[in-house]
Image (cartoon, rainbow, N blue to C red; front, side, top):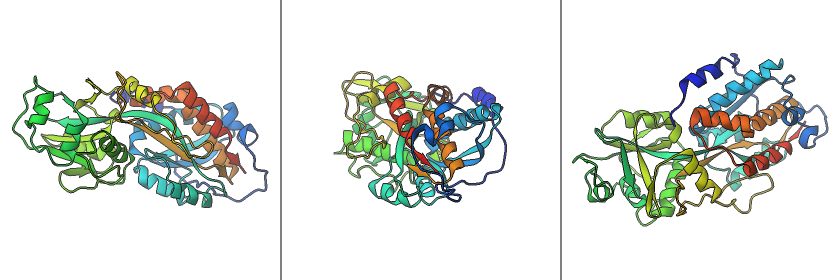
Amino acid sequence: MNVRQNKLASLAALGLVGGLALTACGGGSDTGSTSGSGSDNGGAAASGDYASLTGSLAGAGASSQQNAQTAWTESFMGLVQAQGGSLNVTYDSVGSGTGREQFLSNQAAFAGTDAALTEEELASSKEVCNGEQAFDLPVYISPIAVVFNLDGVDSLNLSPETIAGIFSGKITKWNDEAITKENPDATLPDLDIVPVHRSDKSGTTENFTEYLSETAGDVWTDGPVEEWPTSGGQSGEGTSGLISTVEGGNGTIGYADASQAGNLGTAAIKVGEEYVPYSADAAAKAVDASPREEGREDHDIVVKLDRTTTESGAYPLVLVSYLAVCGSYSDQATGDAVKSYASYIVSAEGQKAAADNAGAAPLSDELSSEAQAAIDAIAVG
């Protein structure tokens, strides 16, 4: 599950180096070309013809996607360059909340987000999406790892109630009975637990607290939230900041996209009567067992994760991270670039890049096909 630096280095060799000029969703002048959908408006997206892609394409958002976005942007730019195009694609890992804000304020052409757009955000998106509503595309499936730094301990078994007790401040010592009962073979010290949370507005936090709320609601009473609701413990900005904070102490524990767990200890979580360690396959099982969220418009593909599943081998502490894109782009170059890039991400090749470099679970064939149909429907011009 660790990042494969050698593969990122080889991907980087394909990348283009250039200055960033933010290309907004509705940027540029309306050339008067007819709006439509499918390949009529996005030939590059539908056919894989990248030779006409030029300029800059900027996205921002979830830090959970950082390793995958590094692989996606660099390998995609390599494909564009190989065909004679000159598109520079960038992704700023500023967190889900800030990424959506930049997208909805016309500062970025797309956003990466671990939390789907809200009804209010969908309504306001028409202002920057050429009169059409934005929508969510599932692009990245990953377990959220419960990571810790405790001398002499590499792995633990933890139930949802115990995790909730730790992060709500009700369990304060590593040798608390709740932890020792679940880990009879571990030597746990009489040491203070230091919970570490995200300091920024985070979709990973929302997924984590949603899991606690749905599986241990009697213990975790603050509900699902993007911004950490309680005082105490320590914090870090972004996924990398949280990981650094956990790494910097002894007795620390946090939560992060599993691709960045590194050498930290990790917990297997209790699902039904078994403890399940995180893995791409276990995350995919949890997603496959979950329905779509009801009430969404066509092409707005949001998974309603079943956090309480008892399916053997499933890991329901998982996030489905999305690409928020416009339903219409007035600028032809921006629209074609978004459609081409999004099509690459949801393709088998793009999903393999995320699996190889970030340990992500590839989209199912059904989800990938559904996402591609939504991308084809984006109007351009």
